[in-house]
Image (cartoon, rainbow, N blue to C red; front, top):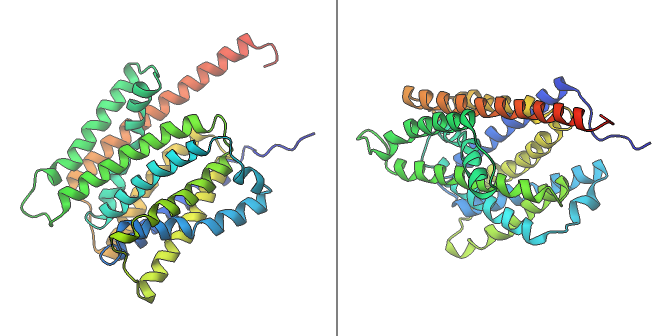
Length: 312
């Protein structure tokens, strides 16, 4: 009998997911701390390259090194890597221009844009509930970015650009999600995790002629730590789905707002505005509606299979 790679351990799944979210927030803070001295392309390289040893050790420990290195769709990995690298670079650039909680909040729009792109690119049907969720989420995004794009006098220089960069990164991540939906049909999860870091490292090197900085010891330590922590966080979030369903774990993503507010205040002296919190609440509400609807559809599909499949 083949031993299953998954089991239902919801407590462990939640701990792993929350740990991953906390580490990803720490990683973002480390990148933000270097943003004044290190260009985004260089930050992407350190984040990606130093995650590779962590991922390789994990694959060896899991006995999945072969699956992590074999691929049937190398060009699929390339396009996933290119989109992901663009999203990461825009996020890192935006972190230098906007408060950490605001970057986190705007990033919550990714599932909203994913629903829209899935309808446009994959022909997925969107009915009233998900249309309503998308509209609520888009209103929340507009509320968050409007003060930045409106050019309020009290805002620091570069804030409008920062808002546009984070919006662009959010849309790019939505494209990544659409691409992964197709990639997982032929590729092992281990391969997707490994080749993204490898390709992102290679692509980021193309920015070297545009002026990389030679970091001092402190900045170098922050950059290397960001890569190592990002690699560990990726492993934790991947492992969490071995012990609990995605629909159960998805709402815990929003714990990142708590982490971002605390870290942003303690490390950078940043506080979220009331307008930002209102917009974030609407985006989170829209996302939760999407998650609930996906869960309901999953239950309906399960009932249909139980009726039509005599082995169920």
